[in-house]
Amino acid sequence: MIPADQVEQLIKSQLPDAQVIIQDLTGTRDHYQATIVSTSFEGLNLIKQHQLVYGSVNAAMASGDLHALTLKTFTPEEWAQQT
Image (cartoon, rainbow, N blue to C red; front, side, top):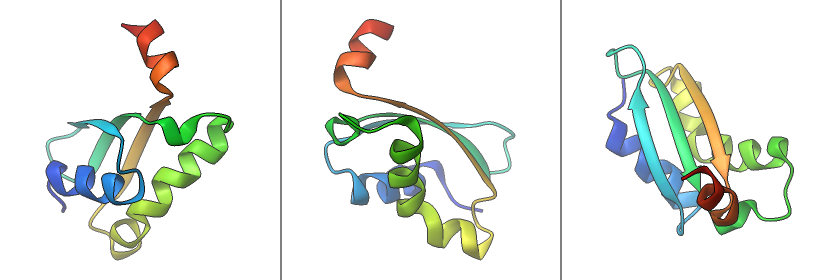
């Protein structure tokens, strides 16, 4: 198990400018959904965006502390259109 704030810190270690919203989907602290807004996603397709994020949490997933992470990734422009 891994606390939500630690998942956020891992993501921000790879994407320092990111705005990150973490939701625990099951209450077990190993299945999360992350909504991430970052300028690093500009010009990247969805797969590349997700690869950036998964690269930051890979160790936690490999150890079993983090079992599942659902991603919603946005550039700041895309996020502005969502809200």
